[in-house]
Amino acid sequence: MMAVTYELIKTCKQTGARLGKVHTPHGSFETPVFMPVGTLATVKTMSPDELERMGANIILSNTYHLWLRPGEDIVEEAGGLHDFMNWDGSILTDSGGFQVFSLSDLRQIEEEGVHFRNHISGEKLFLSPEKAMHIQNSLGADIMMAFDECPPYPAEYDYMKKSVERTSRWAERCLEAHKRTDRQGLFGIVQGGEYEELRRQSAKDLVSLDFPGYAIGGLSVGEPKDVMNRVLDFTTPLLPDNKPRYLMGVGSPDSLIDGSIRGIDMFDCVLPTRIARNGTCMTSNGRLVVRNAKFARDFRPIDENCDCYTCRNYSRAYIRHLVKANETFGFRLTTYHNLYFLLKLMEHVREAIREDRLGDFREEFFEQYGFNKP
Ligand SMILES: Nc1nc2c(CCNCC3CCCCC3)c3[nH]c(NCCc4ccccc4)nc3cc2c(=O)[nH]1
Ligand SMILES: [Zn+2]
Image (cartoon, rainbow, N blue to C red; front, side, top):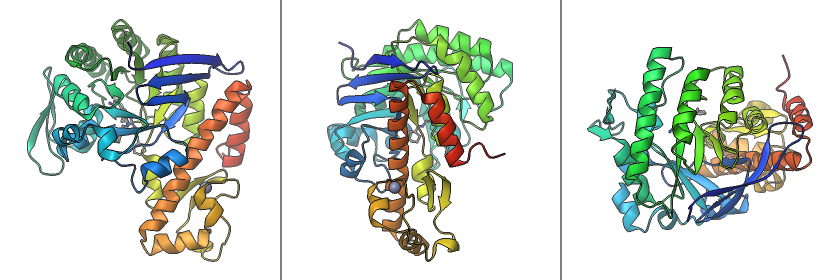
């Protein structure tokens, strides 16, 4: 029995977007969906109860971070991530590949795996496809990611070709090493940078391995948005219609809409929670830096079009005061609003797909948010 399955409900007549549902052992969620990130087994400053109340059904955590701290053995002894963090919705864990490349220096990539330094203690470590599978099996996430290399942007064609071929060999090794296929679904990650023939090669290799879902990796790594959109235009059609497609590391409102239009079903990003912790909020009229002096006597909510707990009960003046005083409650309020804003945005995207008008929704949203301004 497949741990993770996808149900295609309908395709938008105006765009390539699709309305779907993903079923996992910890429940189902409609797609396109934004997945809040909880790196160290917590979505920073939010309780599981608050995440549930704001409508989150799936959150992310991470192999690399939990392996280093507290150690996957402790999480396994607790009964796995769901019990450890008291979250009974779905969980997806990234494989750690990306974090090794983005967090630690002195890394050396070989066929066997990657040698690198622990970014906290400096000790030398080694992560391989097999090790990444064992850790994710111990963590017990409903969706696991294959161990891949996400090359930097830009990367030479020859380097990228070698990297794609190795990532495909690593994907096979992940399938071999994955132990709990009845309870945890393993997604393959398509690489290939901006090179169409390499994306084709990567997708062909992974689709032939018949994963229950596919991620598009190697994007949101500094390339211009039109490069990302072009890569999506020729990559998503290479993936099977009856499997979820997850665009990794994407979480700005415009990219969520443009990715959905190009047939992406799942998104994750640290953006909303990270900018919240420095007092920046996403609103329907663009970004608002609540720390700004102009809000000192502004008693309106962060976003007058938002009905979240933060916007129903607190003013810009109050939140500015808290953020300036470095009061934790202030960051809880901005985080709650930013996550609610993106979860609500995806609800509107799904509604627009139902009504075959996602193209129109994109125009209205971009206009109001200010994306079209030159
Ligand atoms: N395997 C893998 N992961 C990738 C990730 C991590 C996705 N988030 C996981 C999440 C798990 C829990 C801990 C945190 C990470 C990416 N993130 C980005 N861009 C982020 C760009 C960005 C945007 C805003 C702020 C910071 C960074 N591109 C990515 C490409 C890949 C990739 O090819 N392979
Ligand atoms: Zn709000």
